Length: 91
Image 1 (cartoon, rainbow, N blue to C red):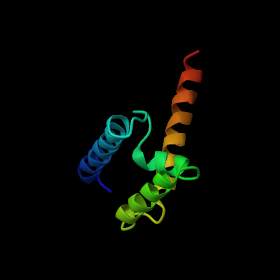
Image 2 (cartoon, rainbow, N blue to C red; image 1 turned 45 degrees about the horizontal axis):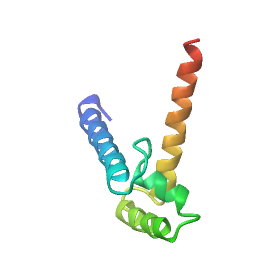
Image 3 (cartoon, one colour; image 1 turned 135 degrees about the vertical axis):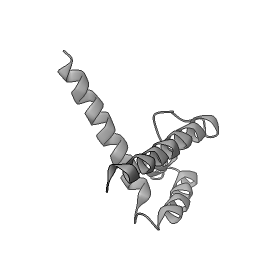
Image 4 (tube, rainbow, N blue to C red; image 1 turned 90 degrees about the horizontal axis):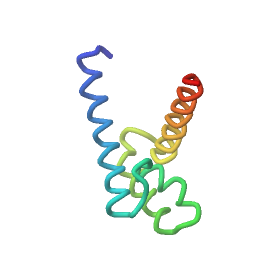
């Protein structure tokens, strides 16, 4: 993908992530460090509400991904690992 197409696509994805984090924090009293999708993946194992929320989120994103909430959680873990590696390099 060329840069002219990549930049707006990346920006749209980042804005969607920010919106998801904001809704998680304000509406669901969650963390700003976690998207609704990642939260649904983690809490869906213990909570009926989050299990159902995960089903809804996966249905919305089915066009793009088979299992979106798991992918979102994996992305957040990968982002956290990256930050930790960068912090280690600063010592």
